[in-house]
Length: 323
Ligand code: DGY
Image (cartoon, rainbow, N blue to C red; front, side, top):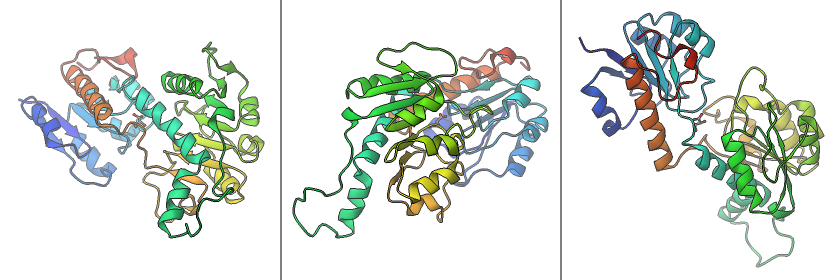
């Protein structure tokens, strides 16, 4: 009998087609996230799950999936999966490290420039017919990246790739990492110092219980007036209520690709703040990067379904246990 595999997101048919020959697929085709109750129902007799950030794989989902041999997510982050529960159940979790580093670092630097040079704001301003005079000496003034001190919180692959790009701009670079690291051109400092000394703070650390609201109310309050917070990591790294207050008062600017609640509700306060550049979680959204992520996720899925170690496993201690 062919093994059953659940795909909890709508993927293009040319990606799914090759899997049809190997597995009995049950695929969620809704544009909205798959409801947990449906996921639980579908996983009752499934051996594989291919998912992404839009599906929360909770402990109770895992508990009800007695046949599950592998969870493969099309993402590097695994914070939407209860990794401890998967590990305790002996289910390897595949993810996609490495391939989205450059795309995400590019977007982080893009957001720095967009926020500090007010690109999105200027575009909105033009489109609403406000450009009634010619060149004006004080119109939409911003800050030069070359003169800024940029702080990088989390010097994993994406943080490091961001630092590499920033060296080319000639700005000062401060860094903080959970474990000590030496990186060319980066002055490693204490986290509180980093927030207090930088013109731009960019978040690149993984979301774990220790890093929730690492950009806390007090750290945001310590940032220089006119400084910018960039987040391409996870929304929950930031105390969003405190950030909204700092943006509303005009004290800070922000460039945000990720939010605690995604999709961002249409009446969310961020949407009315002109000094925040907002993107819909597109850090890895280039065609080649998304293809590389999918390829990695399918390799993980196939390996797990055959009881082999996953090429990219987030909990390698259990790889293949249920094989
Ligand atoms: C990831 O892979 O974790 C990213 O957030 C998706 O862009």
